[in-house]
Length: 371
Image (cartoon, rainbow, N blue to C red; front, side, top):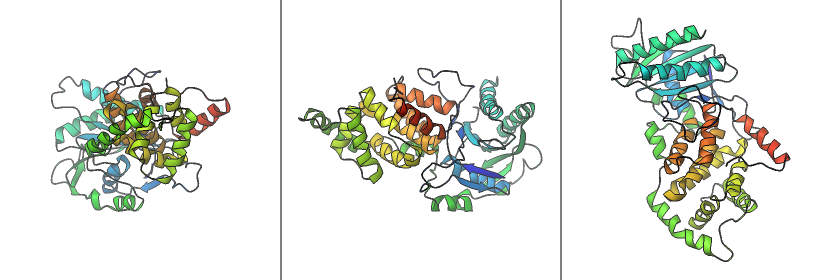
């Protein structure tokens, strides 16, 4: 089985036709849609393709495509659709006696798979609870069959051993597997990918750096009160600043970060930062906005985190995108850009659509993309 690793997004429930003021608490980490077409920049690497020939390979693939080691969750890998995707969803709690959470989980996986024309799926459940794994796998299998989708494998993983989630092979000592030393992991390291120890560890990678945020806060008055102010005061100045900083990989100074954060309060300046992004340079944007998000004082973090979420979606890092949007929406629950990006993720909009929309928008003289 071949699985292409690339991009991100979906929903814990069938999504609405319009973005809500704030997405409801998400059961999932969410569908990660795979855009197998490379960015237009030939210097950027193509999405990685992994060929799984055994259950051990499938188990090892999961943390590589997610970017972290999953816990107490089910991950779905899809095959046979025009655009592959994956999803990680928390398992139901032990007190889900009425099955409401399980029903939501099933809908969150089966409906997007059906909508995108998926033909085959693999499930990997990370849990020590054998009965729970069987219950979830059987419920999913019934719904996939009803949707005309083949369930190739349902595997349960606990520690460094795996079993089938139901049926023969679901009991006993299990079979050994070591994802951390598997060739897939080695390859991902060589390609410069980081696999975090957990989703929480991934979220911590963009958490506030208190000392750095204090330094930026101290620089805010000087950045905005200077004559002329150091902060960009127009969309053109924001674009010029990003053109100077993003491609170099150089960390912005405290005063530059302070000035940029102050300028993002203006919608047109924030839109300039959004429309500055392209798929070909998305990894550079992720690195830049990750740094700004870590250094942003809480009162200014929503704008930076929303831009990071968009950059991460554009670069194909779905879990990081959701972590960034969590930060943005925690700081400002109805932040318009964060809600818009959440909608892109929930609808599984492929990132390759962005350059086309962006270029069309530029040809029309520009329209507001964040209210």
